Image (cartoon, rainbow over all chains, first blue to last red):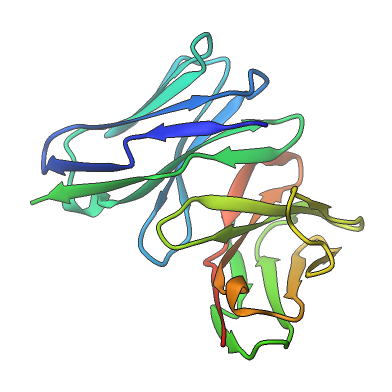
Length: 112
Length: 116
């Protein structure tokens, strides 16, 4: 079945450094790739997304890149801050079926 | 905006009883709502897709008779855990999509269920 692999499972960076989280997906029909941030005990919040007709998207300190050929997409956070500490989930969706497959999550720690 | 609420936020029940969880889209209509289960430090596992006015579509391995889903209106879906057992203890999260924009999901705050 469809699968999304996410790496690393845990990431620790120093405040101000960059963080990169990578995901690969198996369903070649996937065409929408959202990223969610989930703080402890809270709901996942959409932080950025990208559609298959775009290779890169940026929103302030957050950027996402997509390589459809390799079925690979990544989240880049620059100038990390302690409040960026959370669990980040990537996801892939075939908008024809509306079923979202989530990655296993990356626990990001930003040390002050 | 796109606000989704869930009620209750937490519930403790005894083994064998049933628990109903509500998911509401407060400021938009949601033809499609999704129910997820999340174990500690794990990802979101899709349980079922709920479509207004029709039967829910359950994922493989999810018992439809145990997890009853009703989506009676464009703003409300309910999940009833029937004859709950301790292994049903988990964090249940719903999400809702705006009609016509079903790829973008807005999550509820979740419900923590503990079965004793």
